[in-house]
Length: 466
Image (cartoon, rainbow, N blue to C red; front, side):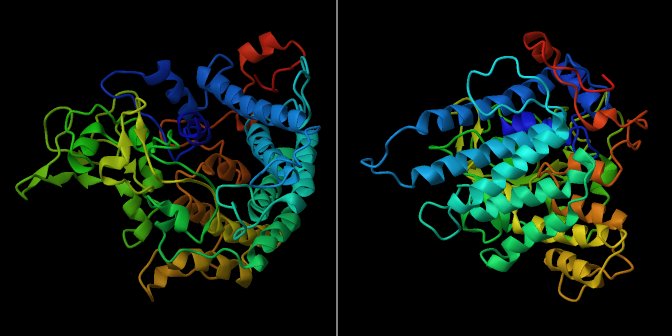
């Protein structure tokens, strides 16, 4: 459900992604509109689904840890040690608790199955729990290059989560942990296990398991590990039919997720990363080798424009679509389980973000001003998105402002589910943007606890402001 639930809760509430109403149809009874305009309520189902998904994962982790504690595995042939298994599951639990803390703030922290009606912990208590879980688990984790490391929570992946926790500590719990964030980043940098890919899009290719940049991924396979369906969520069905597969009769492609014009306009035309957006006339090559126009739903030539005229009444030609993850022709497997199944592994943490988090921490510790070290770190990431010697490829200590760093994070990490946290951290989440007015206060920086959860567990109290 990461791209059907968590993505929407992390991105639809930002200026980065939205779901305009097409042909008068209000998707999910207007919930995506309320996400965009910051008017959601405790009754919105997709907030409930996010809570349920997070705590279901936490429950699975608790169940595994509880049940394996007293099991003698000495006679078993296991790919990893019992200690490593427990450490990895604790890290998966810590990741989901991190997302829960980020999104809901006052969350119950439960470590064992069978705890009834837990009350809210404070954000500070949840923060300390997650921090301790990570630190205590690191010694038992494997590292890149060990047997069975890929797709597992390694030491570097744990430090990446720890860095992310520290980076957002000020906005989540009111504590400055930027020096701690730098130290966590340095643990990854100094280990020398990871490096930037030579191109901006290599971490998202169909076979991105070979990327030297990806620190922690969720492995997917079109046949054996199905469920990654970003193409289906994101791309117009006619673009899929005409450009990316042989079967013109398939009915996949919701044309749901798009991006508002102001975010697309953050990209310069000579920035290679602008190529992650579908925009302009859409064409395909037919069986006779002729280039033809892809039709839109009205039967006209499809010409995608960045501008969306009306959030409540858009056409299928309005709003750019994201193809950051490479689309495989015939996209691996379509339809065997009722959805598109991609072969790309889904990236959670990558080395570019480690460099950018360290740079931001350096700037925040320097009163919001760029140091030369911070500039060098950001320029490492930015350089591959421009031609050699392009003057736009490099920032200086005067041009790398905090606002520009936020913009650059937007360009580099679009659709990687960081934008909500970034806007909150930079004090921009309340701002007015296209079809959204200024928030009256900061309570929308965390979601409402779903009403169904409060009804089921009377020990929980609703978040302030709701």
